[in-house]
Length: 457
Image 1 (cartoon, rainbow, N blue to C red):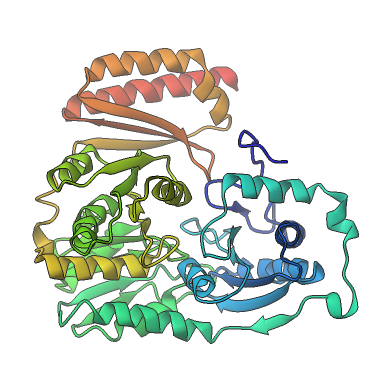
Image 2 (cartoon, rainbow, N blue to C red; image 1 turned 60 degrees about the horizontal axis):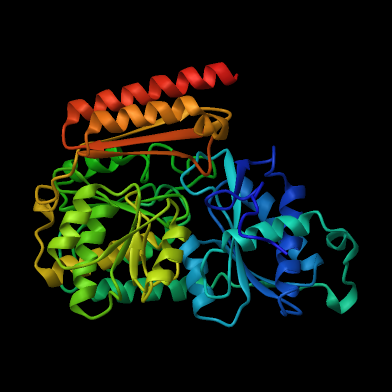
């Protein structure tokens, strides 16, 4: 029996992830994960699971998909393959079918040499920590290797690539609901899973559309494009004299925007706008969930609107867990994961971007002034590459450095130290009204962390 305290060894913040064909992201592991997921479902009363599988555009995706699907079929599951398909698209298929679960081969925003595997439940939501820990336990179970269906009990393979049309049609309907807007826009699909679907959907936009990052070659996903390279979108928006730009990540569960001046509209601003739209329609529930990374100005804006805000740990599935716990119907991250439960069960980059458009139009928001009306507390985030992150975080020396830093802030800011869920990084966030104090505090913490890490090494 898995306890809430059980530590996962393979699964991180967003599935299992590593450089493809090495480490824990070998085809052999993909096959075992596929079998373990089927065993996980079977042990929960699903005798012959039906699982939908999609992937992003990485060259390694076909290799890992073949292994994952083989593992599932060898354990007796029928697998419905979608080919290249966004993560939120897989979630959409699950929400609108009677299938039992989903698998996705993607490393999201990471470079092309990485890949990963994550699973969804039958509602299209990401699995809980405990569920992922149980799948890891099955990896060490002798039953995983001994349980070998034969004959008609071996799983079947069903080509479901036509489901892309259903998902595109739904997004097109949402876009049409944004009304008769005809602003020129730029769409950056990061050479990822949404490359084809984004062109199909935004071809219905009444204004001029310029596309970038829509020609994947297996090796250029996220390369100089998408949400982690917003400078590219900003420059294109200004060059094309566009009113708005959309950038997605490799699997399209995130979206960031640029206004006409090339300034980034992040998840905090999207939550500010979309929450008031949903509240006006009685669709907000108890409030909004943001993570500990969101800027403190969001709390002020929510208070001004009479909307309660709840904080979760970083990770879109933790946002969803807090939404379910509190009854909030909207949540998201500063990084661009936006979840509106009446529209999607997980982050949907295109869906959230379109919902933002609808909200701006109905609320009469001038997109060009949003950033000016959202005066952020100065905030700095540093990613420090550390091998033994947990030892550094647990060290008494770091706690002493944190206490000194808090005194320096004098109650006018906050500090957040956390390990990355997908990379060997320790993230240091400092936020304060005074930018000079903010940078001084961050410098102090970085020096302390590097000194401690050097001592540990």
